[in-house]
Image (tube, rainbow, N blue to C red; front, side):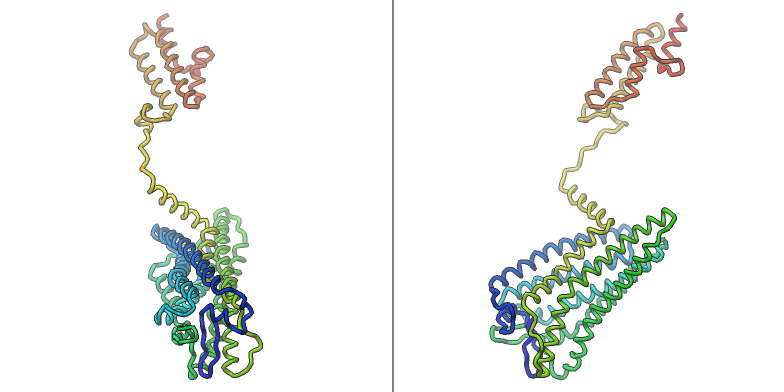
Length: 440
């Protein structure tokens, strides 16, 4: 955003052309037409992918909470994804539209709320990470302790986070104005003379309260939590709990590091621009020129890409989220397929309807038929059922071979019966030999 000096105001302009045709800029050779196409295209890709990833993570968290897995850490992750979704849905499209035009044509309401809304969402994310670090440290310190939290308590935490975020960024809404310039309307930040002393203090305290203090607080508690995870336990159950705690700490620590790195260039540009504006208002010559165009655009793209990186970190480092993602994918894919036909079970075997009948079912049917026939024919015809049973067994073996499965018990049964290599203790059909001995 460009600063223009004036006697009574500090003007902040967000037009690419102002940056491009700034006489003090270092990148005047860049083509404005290329930037008007390239930057909105990159923002569009970030917006689409980020909204999809954040919605997926939010659905998984909501389904887990619906199944009774309500926790403060998961709720804070949901709040983080919610803030990322708001940035991508309501800030990135307007920023891309403003970059594609030489002048501001989105109206007074968007000009008044666009920068304030973005700063509020980013501040809410920073405060959420700080509270999340404290909650993670409390969980890791005693992971076996059952902590019950109610939905009302979580909503109170969310209310204070968003109230603080929206309050600390009020000057971005209060001093936003539409001003007519050389190339048409421009959305600018005009600080009146009576608020100049307040803004002098604000531009120094705002980065400390929104960026430095919350992230330093979070990094400190994550470091302490990771130290707690390094202490090994002799019990297997506690060891597994510590492994889960370590993975959770690593995931939340990665979110904090990603925010600190990707948000840092934007703060460098923010402080740089306001330092130059203060020097120009005082009438002193600044030691450095305005930030180069490539740095400003890169800082804003990295800030918006943070809303895409956060859900990717959560979905990749959390086993719970990966399982939820697989379950969600199964539900979405199964709805598009026809319902499967009921397969016959052991209680109702239908070999003709099933393309791959169970071999043990077929063998069981043949064995029952042979046993019924042998019991109905009596002792006078005891020698005849043996070939029938053998035939039935061979038929069962044939069915098993057709299915590609050979049952070892069935094979041993018929092998011992045909060769007579069994003993009295292991005789599979003792009734046949008892009938023969009685006949003799």
